[in-house]
Image (cartoon, rainbow, N blue to C red):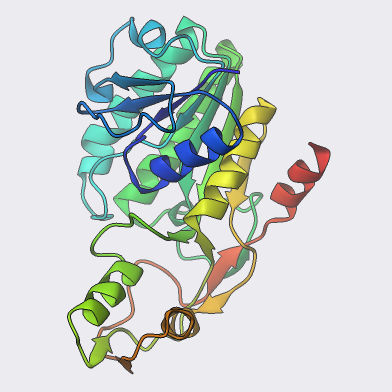
Length: 279
């Protein structure tokens, strides 16, 4: 099986490449700029600008059996209109071009922000109600691809991620900020009240699940990629501090709670577990 990965140099992309390598699958890493540090985990590195899609993209990627599509620019500014005005049309043009050229199976990274301000356990059957441009653009891309399937059949898995953490995360992420505070000898770590409930998953586990979905080459539709277990942000941070033996106090309530997400939501993973059992 030949699998190509866009966004291969990113946080999730690197974990996916490592998982593919562990599974003995040679991957084609698609990146925006030339990279030379993938030799241990990929078969080939391809430089490709998805914002300037051409009819040759499928051939350039080596005519893969599956594309794991992780590339998306403009983050972490979820409220930027870039997601709607630039990213959405470019993403659809790129992906639809690959499908029309013969791509048989596509796995795309979605987001829990597609659910919007809905609280509690969120399952794939719920209507999407995105409240920010990023969530709206992702949801719109999914809908466009589903319309495309009606005229150009292909297998689509829409992997709706919740919250991931691990090595290589963005500098402004919670874990990265905490590590930096510890490394610089800070006595306290400023954060929100920490009572919000979220669904967190190590990026390595998310990559394992994503690869399992990809190698099945099935038309899975929307699938929550999550732990299925709600945890408070405070408890999560306290666990990181305890597990790493760090000495730092939490300054709870320093930052307000985000206004673009509800206080308590997490993923329902019944569909994911059922798909894994079938493999």
